[in-house]
Length: 284
Length: 156
Length: 100
Image 1 (tube, rainbow over the protein chains, first blue to last red):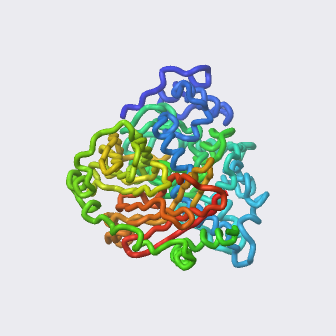
Image 2: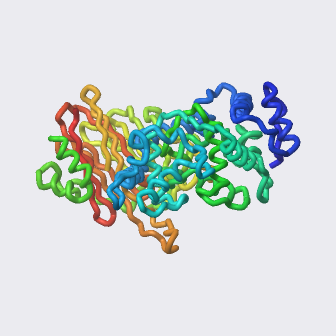
Image 3: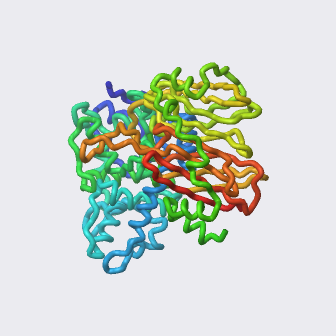
């Protein structure tokens, strides 16, 4: 697929993206807010008539048929048993009798929208999954593997639901945070793999177009709805999905829960600021 | 019935609650109630054989059967199908997916008191016609819809 | 199993979700490479106050963790709706709810 650069774009910010696309380079450094607005401006052009709030549904938003199936399945999700297992993991006390809920404000309710955040002390991006593992380690339990649907996946299937409807509220403040944000942004725009695609190739410059029967979803809204249950029973976390996409793009894999994907999640989550979270949803 | 008992039933949905209901006289054991599983119909691999087995071979198309299924199924493993029959005397509803290895998917026998409505989720191996058969007054009627099943999906 | 029943006038709208693998016998176990044996619900019965209102027979092509929605006429608060199933291995399950 030839990567096409948008031939339009309202305002100076979106034009920066066009220029970058044509130059096949990451756009000139802009502030997170400038990025977010440029992305939104581009997507409004590509998805006319679709409110930004609907972007959380990804490719589904473009099809009434698909949304009806989604709504029907979500009314009584077949993966309720997996969520229940996640609830059991969340509620089970550690050996020292403390619980996950004790690691978070308000028992873990309405917290996920604050993640990822930049930890200035450890100088790294902390995702919600990392925070769950830090909680385990703090309580002398072994951390879960980030790409294990049985442990971390199941746990987040429930734990993230405690933040359903919370608006994404990722902060990028201070030099250290900006460095990590910029690293994630760079990764997003870097072409890689056999097809020489960047995330931007499909999900920014060609969002809304169809690639092999699939509509390319916009990156605004992409981080708000994890984990997903593909086909109603195949649990995928965001990092599992990143890895699967890298695999599909014939690009080298990056580790789940590693710095690169954490930075990418940081950058992409900022783009979704203001959008509501909804965990454990159905996807095809 | 107190909510405690309901919670008990929720938690012990397999085996225990079944036995309790039978013992309490709420239910007769399934085998006494139900006809034997229609092996010949369910295991038929050819569409016309499956229809012959259930007696639906000469079904006439009816616009009194409302079949609701997606145009393009998001995932063939979980295709929502909803059927409403406006044919008086509806006794049973059958779901068939032409190109499944075994086309007959389900039979719903509606006993007195049940509204002629059923909704469920089925597996489809590939794009095919989905048929909703209705048995009413001893005769068979059918509504048909094409459902596309795509392979792929990015799941994002 | 999970059940949700809503009374609208004298019609009880009942939605039920049964947690069952509904194995087709065609799927390979990702760990062993062996085919997972056929294991699916064959019979489902719904009752109102112990009297059968629906009897269903299913094939393996009903989706995993099967969902079913049906509506029973002549229902009133305090009535009990139950759904029971039996699979090809003789395993059974059942759930009951009281209409409010």
